[in-house]
Length: 280
Image (cartoon, rainbow, N blue to C red):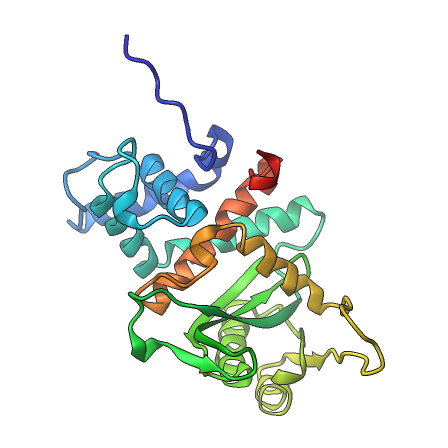
């Protein structure tokens, strides 16, 4: 009898897989109904494919370096691309966020949010036209603008060139949030989002409050409300694929961020810890 392959630390447990399996199985069934199968029917297990995507996100390896225990990297990337295009990652992220909020005794849909941005360096394969320079942070690369609920769970994400100002990225992002989450009427932000964003979101029914840093304080200070989004960026940095931006397309970068949050929220729902180098 062949020895069973030991799972990698990033692989989904049975309990975590049960949380996402219905969405992925429904997606595959719908595509078959439209005659849009990817490769041979049922040749590759959906769980193995998702495990491979999480492995790439968690370890930061190139797609071509996937261990042989997983399906071929071309197949894995093909599914990743289709799931991104079809909105599966954002759909799963929204579903899991509602489950986490319900488990925490909150309403499934948030009524308030926090917006923040992070500039990140890119790899050499990222096209120059999708990059920029953040003069304030002195970083050449891309910018990740995120909106979280008050628990720090991802509501929306937008990846742009680093040279795009927080305000210019914030308005379309909050416009998307208003359309997808009509219950949200309050947002907290830093001073980079004043004026244009405040005026634009007021028409959408979202009151943006700027949380100012006390000019008399020195050194690191935890700012009310804004620390929630900063902690979310810290959670994302546990995924080495997100330490830099390696994705050719900004939309694929957004999918990787959603995938990281899916990984975190499934563990939160099943009370499983996230292995880090500190625990080895």
